[in-house]
Length: 245
Image (cartoon, rainbow, N blue to C red; front, side, top):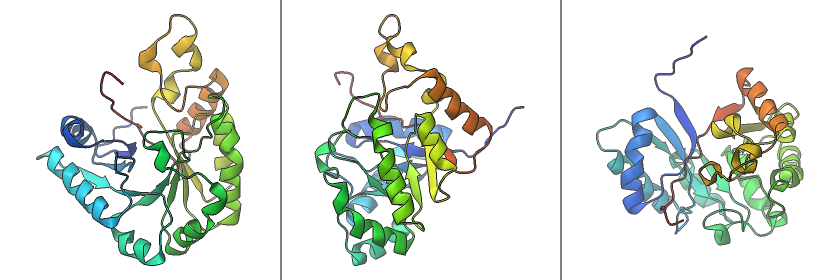
């Protein structure tokens, strides 16, 4: 069966800034009606003013192409007033644990200290989007983060929680355990495993984070996607880098 989407959404998209934004935004706008924009710029997007400025820059970079940027805030300690003011301008707040992604030093260092802000997100019905990895051994980072997802889902049962770019069978299983969990999945994690990256000749063009996992993990992702799981969304995780990086 062929399924054609006339106005698809990219639910996890990095458009960067400056010259890189000007270069890559038209490619996304040509294929998608909109995208959920990640906030981990050199200066993280963590105020309403930065959200509005970044949104305007994206729209300008897209030129005549119709594209709706759905903006996010970078997680930090927010006051209720800040979140109330920003609520209509954002689709969620993105949490990055420190040490695992660009602008990683601005990420959360102590997950035990996030409760007050997460409580406000639950109260104000603002989704929390999470890069769910530790800074441990690369193949175990997502699995090691699963207790945090369980804690969030159980402690904040009305919180809308999105597990970003999931890659493992164990994470897929959480979708059916907690009704307040959703997830994004990339196309490349449906296609490749670690063996494609490094099983023969090293193929650096297939390297990505989170790293591709095992055939069993890939099969679990495929089964959930092909079954049409209602809380599983496509997110490309398109994240352009300069060639030297």
